[in-house]
Image (cartoon, rainbow, N blue to C red):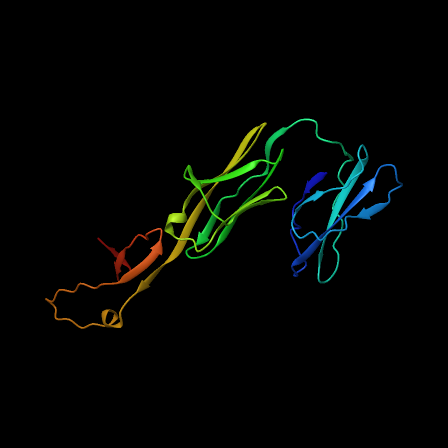
Length: 222
């Protein structure tokens, strides 16, 4: 088997990508390309049932409802052979730092190789995370965080371990909510006697907690 990973095209032609077309070419043939007859919707795929000791070249193209896009550059020839030894996990695409709005959902993802298939564990601020929302398919490790709240902010790590070793990748997640002010109408329009004391109250929200400042006629009040 051969596991291939590629990056999605930067432009999708204003229509979502519906599938990827993966093709291979045997060095013994004269530039004849064969399509992998499977529906591929993600950017990692394991190709099975390849001829042992063959030298194979691969290429991929994206397709949407409008049609097929251009082919990628072809890979170098890869010799298909049976693994003879374990390989330690390798981070092929690391986690990325993210900022997410309060109440929004986000999926952290990284791509990890290794033979045999590594065991995946997730951590937040160094503490293990257990969730039914984590998956590891086609070497893509994913962790879904639904309805992000203030406690979701932190440092996240994904650790892969097999019999040959381990590898780890980390990222920072920041949950943010833009500041808002709620000023009662009675506070906005008031007439007071010259000697009267005025103590306006304004409700505010935002995360992280916003810094509050007051001004009078454009001048800061202390």
